[in-house]
Length: 202
Image (cartoon, rainbow, N blue to C red; front, side, top):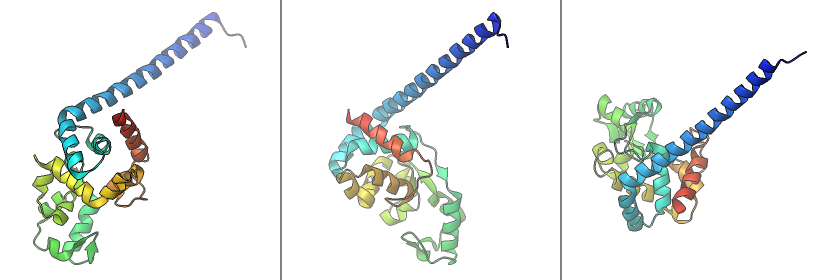
């Protein structure tokens, strides 16, 4: 088979174009990541450092977690978890006896709308609304001005000792799945979190 000069030139052009796309992809990826870090520091950096000292927790983990959960944004949309909603409705109606630490009496007078809020994640740490019931606070507390404090408070209460022992992988899994050995929804959740920690340690 004879390859013409035009074919060779075309192949070279396509390879050059492909390489350019790859370079642009990585430049965009790095830029987006740097934007997230900048946004995080601007919106939460100082306050997170203060809370880390108050609760004796590593600030690099708290910052990395917010990058994972909300990209450092100040205004964070909630995420409705349909499967959690169904569980909470079943708990309220007595079809199941408990859900994590919750029992039927916790939801006895809760409306469907209220349960929808409890089945949604809120704030920079994306805490599930029903976690408020254990803390004795309202959903508005984890999505308002005090969201950062209550998020760190809950983290310290649930798995602070893991963090103080530098067990970051287990900590990420607990936050995302409820178990130190749980399988995360996104396969790169933990590995990305560990990379963010290395960045904030610099």
